[in-house]
Length: 171
Image (cartoon, rainbow, N blue to C red):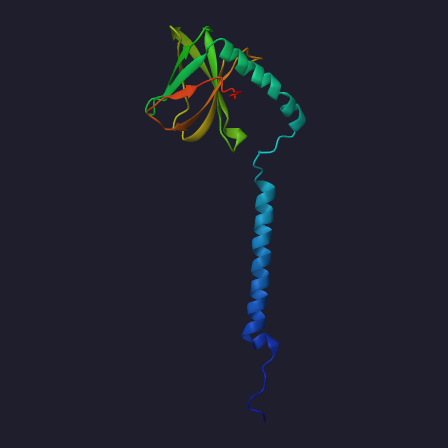
């Protein structure tokens, strides 16, 4: 009898190693496919054309804020979550609306109401534990506001954030 007989394929290491690699590649790719289908990130706008045509309206609101010489300083107390906005310029509406826009997930966006207390100072309440970077928009009404101020904030923060018309320089 031959002492160097080759065992059948199913008793050897290399076929099982290659089958294991193939099965692990299939399982990982299936996992990623399932995750990509289930976790929609919401980044793509379905009405991109309508959204694109609205840019001119947004610029008009920011031009109006610049014509009224509007600017604001926003502070959110990290302990009490109180919002204090000091508005300067020629407008003093009874209430302001602060829109907090999370850069990557639209389901985290929030709109807060700020009430006028005196001399351009507005107060409101932010959600607890506000964290990370947010885009900020301040406007005088929910439905078709006349003007808009924009800014960016990193929370929590002890300091304030400037909100300006945000028009690009044309010099």
